[in-house]
Image 1 (cartoon, rainbow, N blue to C red):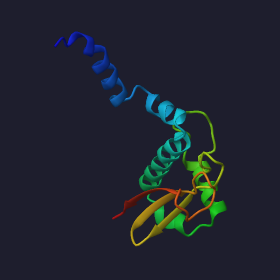
Image 2 (image 1 turned 135 degrees about the vertical axis):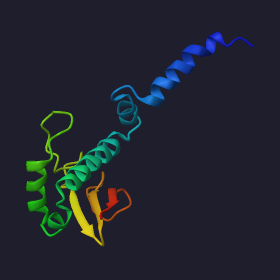
Image 3 (image 1 turned 180 degrees about the vertical axis):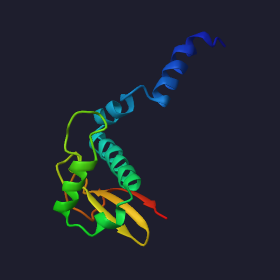
Length: 127
């Protein structure tokens, strides 16, 4: 069996697996998962910012409007596109909760309704 014809396929597979910048996101978008991928990436970024600033407990006491103001002020768009990071890809405000030392950042998902099966969450236990 000749392996030479398989080399381009293996190389392409490795590139896809490692992910050239944005390639996985583009593939997900074409398959209808683009919003979910963007939301997960956004939630992870927001969670990391909250952790770094050490303000999880404070943020959990704020209402949604005040949380949005905090996110707008302290969470820049990592892609430099100046989008509003306080809103998920579907335009719904991101929620931040801190309960029992667990920080959770939530998107309502495509249906724009919280506490449904399509919600997207990013959580971490805090010290």
